[in-house]
Image (cartoon, rainbow, N blue to C red; front, side, top):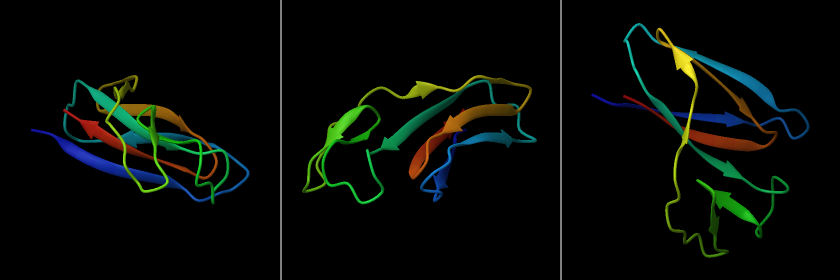
Length: 88
């Protein structure tokens, strides 16, 4: 099966290293990241590497693989950003 997790970094100034652990033995993890120049940006916003229009429209891009092993995955989350994680 799959598990989806949403992570949000509300800090406007500092990114953070995120560690996700699970008792399930997932062999793969992918991230679809939401990025923007500033927290209140309406332009240059991307989700999964694809531009999001001011009206909220976008076409899915490729998910980034997240490195991990033995049920532990780590990644960096930029300031004022979010990510959808899929574990399988």
